[in-house]
Image: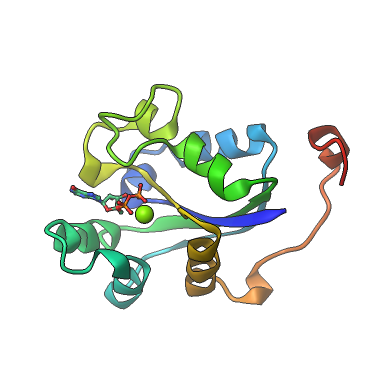
Length: 151
Ligand code: IDP
Ligand code: MG
């Protein structure tokens, strides 16, 4: 099983679509093992998006992500990193396939509703930035034998 980091960005909270978005991951069969609302500090935003430092959109990205609370989550399941990224869709919502979250809920690359880790290494790094180990829950879910052929 893999874990990945997902964040519903300020626009998702402001637009009142966090429930719909979380439902998509639940319906797919993923297990939410951590979740909280927080207002991201500039320091945390800079760490989270360190790879983009120096790019023309970096300042705007920091302002956007720190502007209002977000919902941070850890999502667990088979091939979670890759499958969650495919549910999220392409970075630019104008190019994201309909049926993906960004394809269904956005129009502007600077307001693309959701973040998801792009690799297992990023997932580990991002989960550790946002959650302590006590905030991540290991539990069995009653439907697991119906989601997976073998556990
Ligand atoms: P990702 O979120 O799909 O992994 P990245 O290339 O890692 O995409 O970019 C991180 C975030 O930076 C994007 O989700 C988006 O919010 C923002 N971003 C990326 N490119 C642009 C841009 O050209 N203009 C404005 N914001 C951008
Ligand atoms: Mg990225």
